[in-house]
Length: 264
Image 1 (cartoon, rainbow, N blue to C red):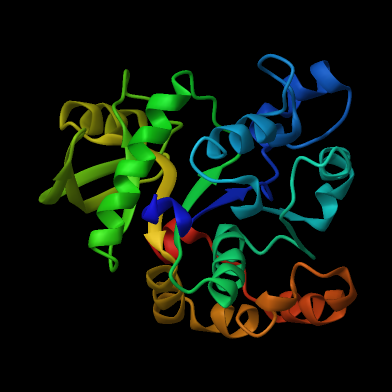
Image 2: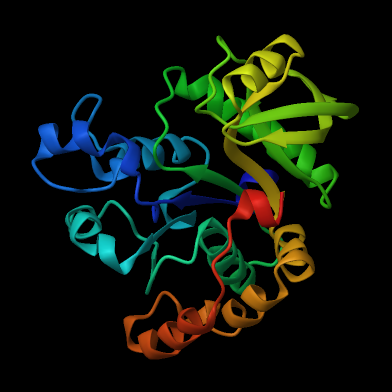
């Protein structure tokens, strides 16, 4: 219970998701990013992700990060009262800003926080088991607050369209198995490289990760100092529309950065 008291979820919903546009155009008749599309059941991929996170975190501690271009798709869910925390970025500055803006915002209110970060375009069949796994990782992070722990998925095939994680030496363990250092990331490898990753026991990169908010922010200052310099002063303002001008100015000067490439 003590762990959950300081556990927050960040849901990344600011991407463009272009790869599925032809399918989404047939389903919805528009150009919406895939996280706002209803492809399984009656809920959007974003709604699936929020409901999944809510198995571990109360709604008031779930932060959805989007961008201004997506407001038309987010607004109906906000009006339904389903997303109490939404941070709208003025423009897309990459996944690094999508992670670091809410990290600074959350730390401003709760510096003891552990955050679980979820992309909003995953489909997870066994949601309760998955969230139990995330909670166990969060318990590990609470004991080892300097680690950022990324969750890998056991691959079923050598898929070159996915990112891969090559494990290094073990540094700990949970019920599900070892926690390894990362030896190397393989982002969208060639077909031959993907077969090599599969043969060596590499894992698919889910980009679901858990970290103490302080460790995330420290890593941001270390590897992305200019971006952190722009985001840190305005993070506490990001939830209030009346402070939009300050946030817009910060984003206009902020560099573009991919969280995986620049930080992980």
